[in-house]
Image 1 (tube, rainbow, N blue to C red):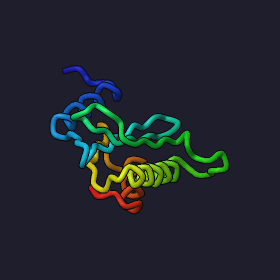
Image 2: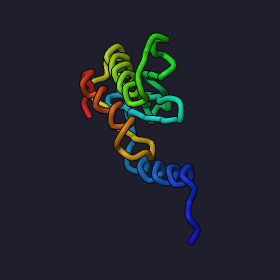
Image 3: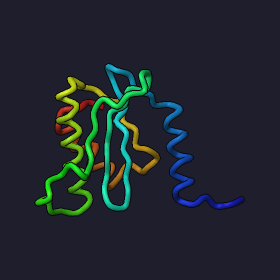
Image 4: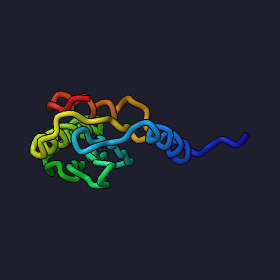
Length: 118
């Protein structure tokens, strides 16, 4: 049996998660994408195929200093603020095939502290 490369393994895990997780207008899907340099999150209504709100590490102030976990926590706060502006309270969390620890966990916890329920 061949061993999958890390990107292919993540794509397989993400596909498996997406079979079970779907977002609606009332309860959109909070999607996380993690790159080597930063992290992004967006709220997606899968029924309409629209992004309702989004936040990225590129939106952080240039004066931001911290490691990538602190960066992910700030993005979590930003996505919670964007959700509040869009009048969204509850979401379904889609970790995107990533393991729930480190940056993904920091983003999720900061979003919860910002008022999102999931």
